[in-house]
Length: 339
Image (cartoon, rainbow, N blue to C red; front, side):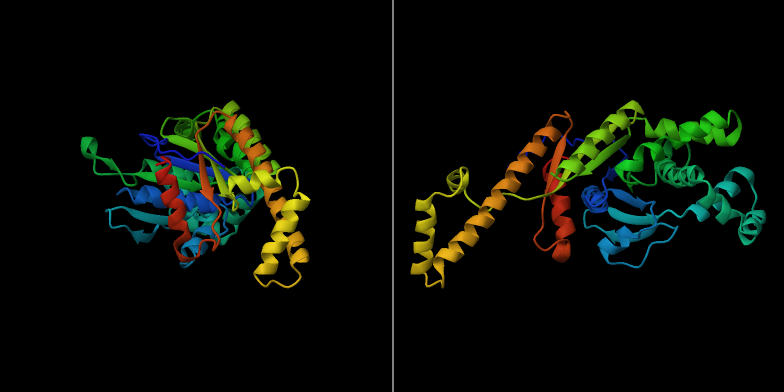
């Protein structure tokens, strides 16, 4: 149903910050995890971060809830490794105060007085500044000094807020820069905006081949383009391939003929199936629903293809993420050239 090709080079070559968004329910956390695995299996050190306090990463990998500290999830035989991080606004604010204002113990005192909780809950804009700021720090962190300095992480994959909030989330530092004209706050806001709009960043949008997710995907692409955010690929998740042959689909395209219905009933009767005519009707009704689903997928896929972006397709897994399903998705992203 959908084209799957292997480009000669990764579609994300040179990208170090992968931001993954999508309508709620499209599986953006799953896609972010699969992308992070695919990169780590290329011998890279990768950080997979989340900012929505949902502990989606720990659920996917069946590990203890992540904290505001980078935690090793696994080492890969290729030499790569995957680390996890759940960015927590309160801890991020204390880090920020210590880094830029050298508050030290005063920051702990503010926390005891409840000022930190107040600041991170009363001002959602400030919360987003702190969350994206922590990701910015991870991308820019380096080992060594001078010419020998190298990034700590080869890539950072961010499980970002959904498409309905992604524009505001990624653009919040531009708003901060409008308020803070000088000083360290303005300086960091400008630096974060520069990173988000640079060639080492790519925003990937996850969708399903359904009308509402596809429309949100298209709307998000338009909004991010206006905000000058570098767009990556579109990841179509949970694609259901045909379970019938092309010939069978053609036979059903105009509705099951009386001859086809009778032939199926005869086959069922010869196989010893009770009530073959009723069973044939049930099977043909299910086949018609399947055909309708494929037609709808095809229509939505055409809308996705019309956006002119690289598109990657992930198969719907019969057993979900059980029994290594997440690595199957990672292999698909690699095979299609996303990494």
